Image (cartoon, rainbow, N blue to C red; front, side, top):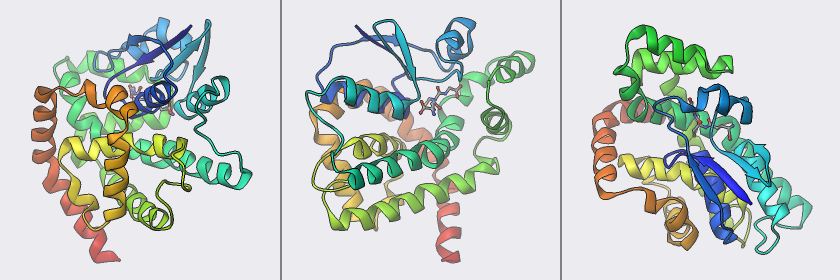
Length: 267
Ligand SMILES: N[C@@H](CCC(=O)N[C@@H](CS)C(=O)NCC(=O)O)C(=O)O
């Protein structure tokens, strides 16, 4: 019995859902309302003390942290292997997964949060908002979210977030010039862990970020064409939602573009 605590727009949850779909596993979804901070209720914190999605529950036992969930599913259900057997290739795969966890994911949150989550928090009173933010268990995330709520895309974190995104894209272009998938000729967890972060770029209409990286564009198109991506990610984005995200992305684009140009002039 597999259960996943998830949210449609969470890239971390999308990673786990792509693995479930690649392996054609059946699972039960529990939607966690991040805008209403359901992830910070005592019930959810008992399951996932970090107060984030996704959480996998397998036969009653929770597994947390999206990359660990992906590897766990790959180990526990070996029908379709999504990790290479060669130790060096495994190390390369884990390098990309770690890069996503440590750098790309917080950067994505920094760019996505002000556009998607901030508006619903701003509808609450200042006191209620602060009370909710205080419940975020990890200090760096708590402090970052406070800055993003207070300042939106004017927060100082945004410059670095754009820079991490851009450097990741350039490094991926180099890797993909050598082989069709991130670590070789086979689709792996490295591809799965990176692809959702390009959904973010696409939904906001920020493709200019990778306009000079054709291998990355082609790689993402191939990820998107897989049935797993359609089932785990694309089908959650209705035309109405996509229109809304695109218009938010276009309003935000001048700020993103300004940071991209500053970096380009510093190279
Ligand atoms: N390192 C965690 C990060 C998970 C994470 O940040 N999830 C976000 C959604 S993508 C979340 O639940 N955010 C809730 C919040 O920030 O309040 C993982 O990989 O599972």
